[in-house]
Length: 286
Image (cartoon, rainbow, N blue to C red; front, side, top):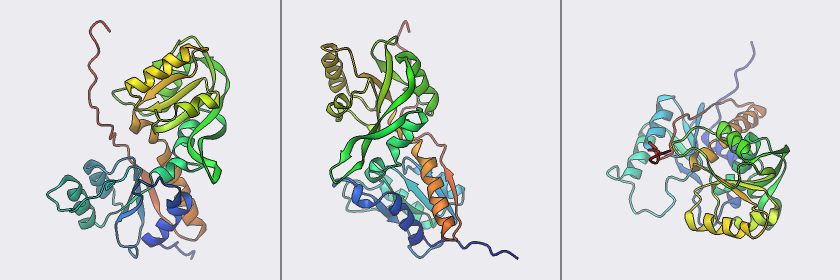
């Protein structure tokens, strides 16, 4: 009778996650790693999500998960209490009492290859990927990616491609530029990316896909582009949607790595939309 692979201990699962996205790749201000959980506890089911919200924790508990892996940190800024009378403390208490560990892979997953921006680039069918902002000591890694479409296409059609590739949000996809312009070279950055405009221009990208574009940086980028050929054009998506594609790939890599060591876990990706916006009211006359 064939043997049944053993469930790994939490510490073994964390070892794999940190081999995929080493904590040393994280930005100095970040808070990655294990938030709560007993390293010796067995892990049979892992739940993946972008945000460690109350709703996501309840979803993970209902699914019977032993570990919740999130992209965004639960405790990014220092706190003096995790009492259940605070909203973050309530999340910690719910996880601990349910036996749910929480682990965070944030900017270390952003820098990874494969990582958050790789996943975004690949759902947009980009090839020949290179980092947009390479790590100084590892130029094959870094924030963002730049790649190429198989053939030039209209900017408007490319925006439709983005909308079809990402999960739906109330924001949808916003476009800055001539929809009839042809684009082929594409820069992407999962999450907030308006600090990288200099890198985008240096990359020669025709269009930049990212999230959380603020008025002044976006306006100045378009004004500067007007002095040239209008590039890079801008495609702005919801923060949560831009990072969600990473989850499935990370889940698959975790399962495969543990299986290669004779360990088995189930992995599930959250379908809960944690984008904070819940309604869009069209402008009059739209």
